[in-house]
Image 1 (tube, rainbow, N blue to C red):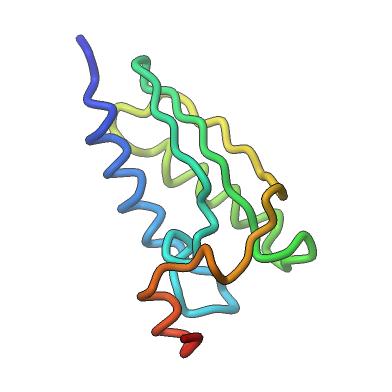
Image 2 (cartoon, rainbow, N blue to C red; image 1 turned 120 degrees about the horizontal axis):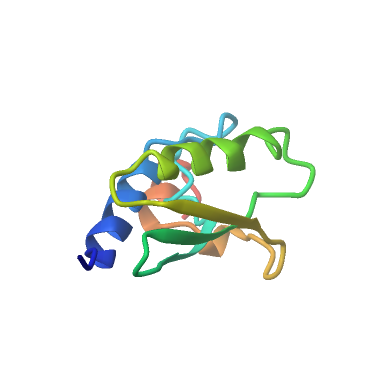
Amino acid sequence: MAIDTGKIKEQIIEQIQTIYDPEIPVDIWELGLIYDIDVKEDGSVILLMTLTSPACPVAESLPMEVQEKVIGLAGVTDVDLRLVWDPPWSKERMSDEAKLALDMF
């Protein structure tokens, strides 16, 4: 039975929107920390994410939290979370909502 990869991707984004950077009152999706979500037909997911900086105090815990929340979704069989630094994160990756919340316009 084929899975609805688009629906799973939407659910992944909803889960990611519940995860906040502890230093910034904005979820990591709106911050632009998730670079790519690739849902395969077998339910496996490849997630590319970054952090605001390599020295981020949650560098170890935040990716693990993302991976745990995504693997818990129905239809997801595996999560390959890849922490990347290229391109480096910048405030331009933030959504307008995040910029407004942080008064960065």
